[in-house]
Amino acid sequence: MAGASRKKTTWRDLKHRLSTLDQAALIGLIQDLYRASKDNQAFLHARFALGEDVLAPYKAVIHRWVCPDVLRNQDISVSRAKKAIADYRKAIGHPEGLAELSVFYCESCAEFLGFCGMDDESYFNALIRMFDQALKVIRTLDPKQRAALAGRLSAVWRDAHNWGWGVADDMGDLMAEYGLAET
Image 1 (spheres, rainbow, N blue to C red):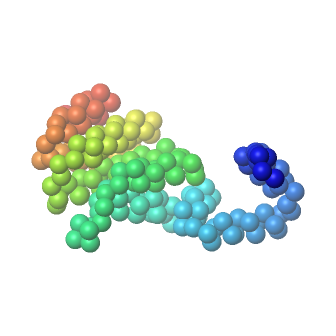
Image 2: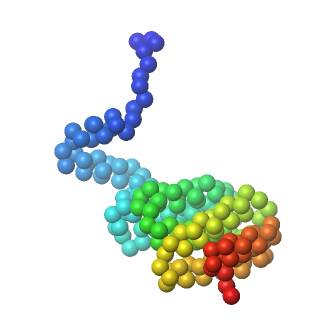
Image 3: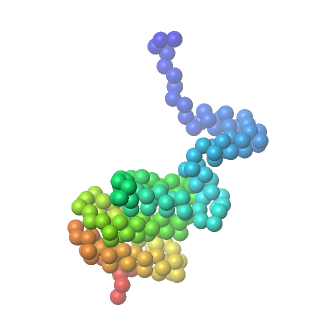
């Protein structure tokens, strides 16, 4: 049929089909999705709080992309690292987990910058944005969690004084803005 256009398949179409499946068929479908990719496994583990550390797969992705092994000629990808945090947010999005992943991102950047010089403004800008995001979510946590995570960010801030690009100044301004600056 030339000229006939097919409408785009939507969630509504899929939802209708899913509603016709019985429980065994739905479980089989989820099993197939689980086996299809590590991302799906991480999503389901996080959603149902399965395993000892549901953040581990997300942390592995973050670390790989913002703290690559330069001896193995690995690339940097801020967008892939940030996608891991977005994927966690979609899976469950607990503020504690988001704070941990955001702080871990900053720590991974600090680790990379500690042994490998960098002259990439976009990398530093992304780090500062993530630092800001971490502070925003930390502010929503209870005081004990807030203190521990803010202390880890303070360590990143101290390291930032060696990097240039005004990163330490920007981080210091953010720490003060959120009332988490060291006294």
